[in-house]
Image 1 (cartoon, rainbow, N blue to C red):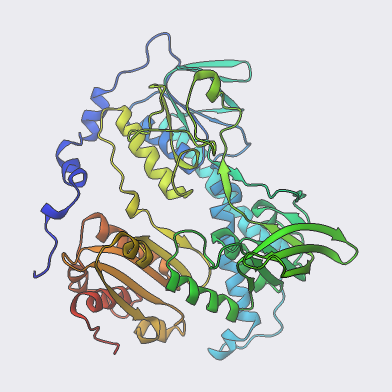
Image 2: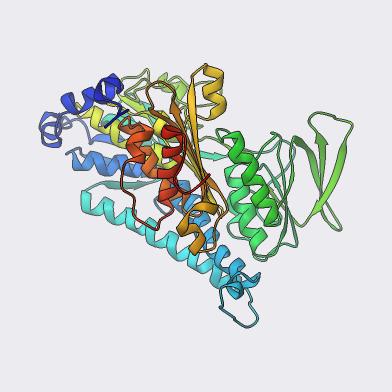
Length: 503
């Protein structure tokens, strides 16, 4: 196939992994079991996506594994007050919005008065969380992972203390995740001034909501309450929505779509403070570029979404001599090993994007390394998704990053207005953009806005992991009619200069 990227152009680590990575059976046979003086081979502190996956994988590899969790349920922030409950609210609020605002009527589906039963709405979310957190407990039981409830503290290179219990272990894995970053001068009460946690369980739909931050969490939760009837305004310090890493062109179109849905934005604006008054909460803002431009905005609920920080306080890092950076992130090498050789760390507790799927992969790779494997992860192939409607997803480099690096590249685009599946379901907001190396045609980045972008991005990740060229993808047969054909056409545009179904 002309233009195909060969194995010679693949990263050395990627080519070698298939050759030197031991099989699972070899990994199990190689590992050294705990000495008689040790209670475990591995103690994992934290049961979030990184921690529980690492614990299960370790047990599957034959490690005598203990997982410590301070909360009543397993799963960490993601399953309990993060990814999972927010997606339930996003999904169901989208249905409500379709019914309430005439979209179903345009499709010939006429219903009577549409009303919201917030208690039932919230119960579906709670049931999903309960089912998935219970599923983690089931996995622990079936794989022989011992669960210990309490706060774990590292009291030695090979010792973790939980309350009065001291657990001797060969390895320790820090998977404590992250917590909400507080906003200076604003106290969270989780009722009218809420974090992302409180925003998942409001007792009523606020008439007015202000969101501090228009990053991933801010626009997702802002979308939920906007769909349910709240007048939402997002105040963002940066000059674009979507947070760090989003492509500029994608951010601009994404903002236009959200504004069309009713969400207002104050970009390049910083929050100076907030006070509760007789008419709700008054938020004082100021222009980043011109401090003389000030505005007071009133709301009934203030949602603070200014990011998250590593949850590493109280672990005993300093007592054992484990190094951390100025932001509290544990320093690790390519094997996720700290400067104390028996202690490892993954996920939000270390450097890198705070993403559940990143933590999961790191957990698996980390314990395979403990068992003698060769750790390898390509962080350029870790995707990001914003689960609004339409969804936004990307992987790899942006145009801005490639331009700054001096990399010559070609751009391929395809609008969903020209995609047959998007047309048939009347959901044509968005586009797919691919970036390919101008010389080798290798795929360098993929950015998209689409109703199923969160699913479609995985094809792009797989392609990039295997060093595919835009021609490779353009020549792969895609089922018709599917939104995935837009990805194929964008690659055809990047490689050949023209798509078939767009001019």
